[in-house]
Image: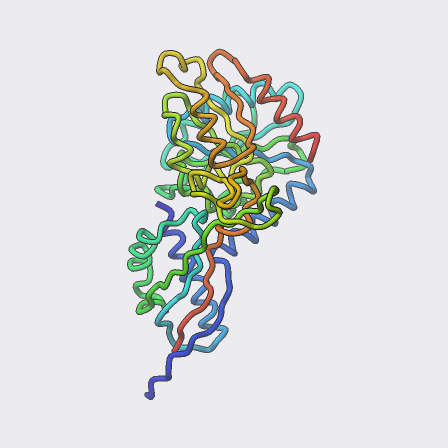
Length: 114
Length: 222
């Protein structure tokens, strides 16, 4: 699974920020994680638990904010939620939708630092 | 030492920003060198290498073609692809389940991109992990073989949703394994409405013309 690579990238981002902020440590890392990001929260948490050892993030926990999929519906002419990840249809009018405008996010949005 | 109070700071950084920046650089280099870059993703055993071997052989008379292939442990794929006499380089990822932009960049190090028309990037056989990594490609192709089951797109919606074209492989075996093409098409359209789907057999050559036509059109519209 690629969650270990993702966990290492999170630590990279966090360590850069710690240096920038002149902080001494980080207690939590807040992530926005899209339903289409291709990353599983549970496996990411366990991978992060291993990857954080002996890094500046050694005592940090991950806090997740789920980002649902939103696609532009050409019929409603509005960004809309979709029926399900197995059915890319507008949840309002049921037309097929292909322009995903939200849901691929994988971002460090905030950090609690000391 | 007095422990400082924790404070919350806004960060807003993409976790894969380093990969994304490098992928953008690669895409720009490909554009400047006028090389059309196609990546292939699929499960292990879906026939990527046979399909690519046939593709390289077919293109080679008219175009300068090259391929980089990702594999966990062996060089077997590169050896097979080299039979097409195209330029081939193996990336051995050593248990890493996907290619990233850095691996592609390193693999291209001693090639002059100006000497190429088409570059194929064969990802590690995996329908999960490659979906998160931009490789700088212009066309992402997902392969599904008839032996895998028609509902695979519903099980791996993320990778199918991020692809530009779906290729159903081993179509010569469709009858033997009672593959239901309509159901497979339906599953693909459910997770990626409007995606073109073509059926091929690398063994008999069936459907290869249609696939090559897609490649020519991708290159024409670059």
